Image 1 (cartoon, rainbow, N blue to C red):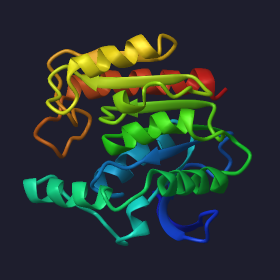
Image 2: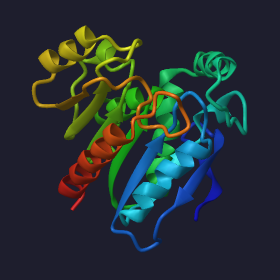
Image 3: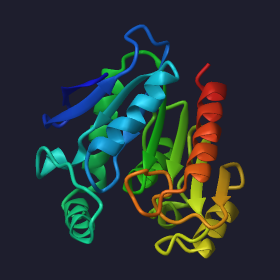
Image 4: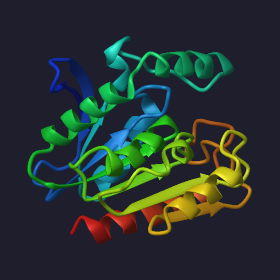
Length: 221
């Protein structure tokens, strides 16, 4: 089981992060939160990667403006999470992502994110040089930054019935990035990988995890 640690970003900001996984792991994963903070679900996601043998760190990105954020999934939580997301600059987010990568040392690294973090996972390929593989689940901002050039292999996951990410956006990503592996899950909604949400789909989550694990196993050898 993991624990919270403190990270230091390049601009002097300190933030908390969830750390787990074997100390002797040869590869590492940076896990990027949804708009709900490094909550129980995100920590559970970290443990899934730890169980695969990776050293894992999930930086608390909201610490930039509000520390200790752990929201649930009610309508009020969604509103609060969106408001918190609005307080962060993209540049500051990437400083904290790189701080998490630095804390994992000289290992070969991957990045994976969910929701807001799904977009940041994409940015891990396009805006950072720390990662050998990047993975994003239902990142609503990927389409808007689809013309950025990835510096490593990328795999993306989207739900067919995600009301916040229309299939036209997904197809725009495919067209702009033919080298990126894009999966669409028929009938799946936003957040289909979170077992604490009404939109959870166990079969789709299992398949997306299987694909994600295989992707990292291939690229983080």
